[in-house]
Image (tube, rainbow, N blue to C red; front, side):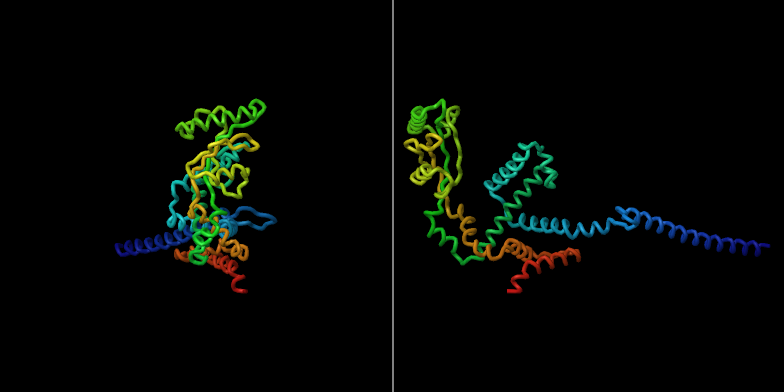
Length: 327
């Protein structure tokens, strides 16, 4: 009796195990089918005439178009940020550029946030960072182009053309002639201001004192071929750094008192000289800027780990250098 009882328990235990295993298998199959169904329907973005447009298809296309551009942008940004640090002056220039673009849009009825979203930026700081990267890109491009020139080419060009290309930083006070201010009145006021300067007052002090009667402007660096009226340019050239006009200079606007602040150095003109010397090369090969960045990535050991994106980049480089191979 006890033996039968033991056998019965044994048989029941085996059946239970078999049933449990079968149930587990069925459960796994159902779960897998459920996951597949969920993924299938989740992956479907749209159908048309019974044909499915899947998320995977769209994602792959996005990866190889805008995704590729975004990747290259991030790669270059990382390299440039490692190589270059902007000076205080360049930081200021970046902020001025950012504010100029935003002011241009907000004056046309857009809000700052609308402008940022329109160009794919979340915050002002993100937009400012993009401007800074652009400045660094230009710095690298000019460094690259200079390396392609003959050694000493920039210095030689500067020495031979200094008088033609030299520029001068200036500010000026303008006393306007108008319906309410005659020529004689404007001239008298300009002479009065010069007298104050002769007495030892600074340019800033007289600007503050006469601010309601004058127009004050900082003109930045201007050269002999600038669009300023010739009489102003002649005065600018005649003055030395730190000097101001001893007699008022008349233009079609009124009477000016010019204050020359500084003369350009070779470093100030370097980019302009490089651009001038590289013009022929750039005209012959419009791909030079893109090739410059291909070389930059090589120098910094770029490895693209995604196979499809790597193939896309190889095709991009091949197309870029195709004309060089054929010539």
